[in-house]
Image (tube, rainbow, N blue to C red):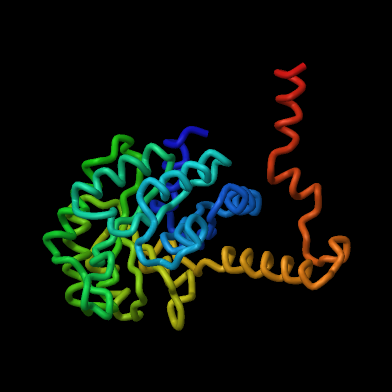
Length: 285
């Protein structure tokens, strides 16, 4: 499937009337599992990318090149539309342009650019935001950088939890006016804040880390929320499964007695073993 078709599928979700939960994915196999299970889109978080590629915490240690390489591995493995957390665009507005170009080439359906001041500056104990003007400049640069008009550019902000409702509304209006296709609200917000944001802008909304009284998808859909993250449990589950398996082996458990292993049939299906057998027959014999 051509990348533009995946992007159009993503746009159809934004244009719809439902709120969906994306699959948190981190490599080709997790993306294939999500696709097989019927998830509409996949999400590669910046934190999960740092965990999977570097084994490092989410401190903006991952480079753009490393992120793009991991994205390319995921997008080539199937047809699941992939949404990627591109953090702050790896620098200023010019770096944002480069980020969009690299990730578009790698096959993403959508990407988020945020207005958090990253990496955490010297002397700051808590996250802060770049100025509104700088944030707008980043959004304008991201929109201008894409070559495929189907690519979805999402402005991301944590303003509700960092700077309050009025600042969040000002940023939402300004980023929408800059041309982003949707707004991602991260860091938590209240129901009144969501109501205010939904009234302030017409672009679709996305939420990260929803909880409390913001877990009803019908209510979220009525407030123009089209995508709501549930967290990134699949990566944590894979870490725990690997840890427990290696621990059991180290302590003497026989491989044949290990619980919870994928069957050879499942491994074969997810690695597309049948395709490779057909290609072997066609091209090597």
